[in-house]
Image (tube, rainbow, N blue to C red; front, side):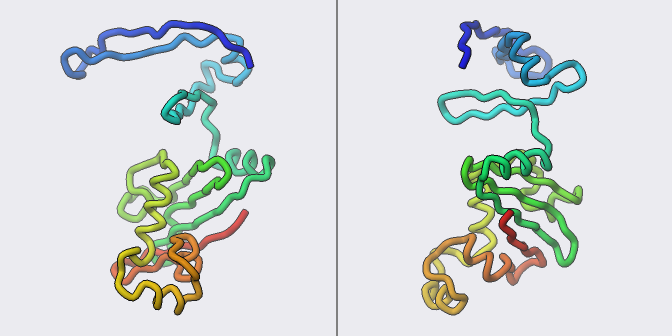
Length: 178
């Protein structure tokens, strides 16, 4: 791993930003940019923050994300989210890296898995799973779990049995291991 020192570039935000707002930029060595195959024609990047480090990487297409994770031997789940018989969102969950990628097939956020959110984190994914199954606090939960053949409260296992169907909507999920 190569390490270089740099300085944070700080300037006033301007435009419609609030008074005193700042913008922050970092200069990255050209050699690193070239190794990432970034250039004037390929400038899309993904930034991630784990609470301690900021990671900058080229934006990965949905299909390339799947191929790359499979090549690394990661456990991947594919969840297709439907409204009636219409595929609305495909979710790929990488259980090794705790990363979620999604692809929406419709524009109406009412019927997409995560509404208007396009970048979803692992907590968002787990919250979504919980929303598509019986509440953990429901009276008679143990009897319900027993009746569907699930030993303990696990949203993914419940969804595998129930397809995440809820009485109040027409959405459901198909779960597949990749």
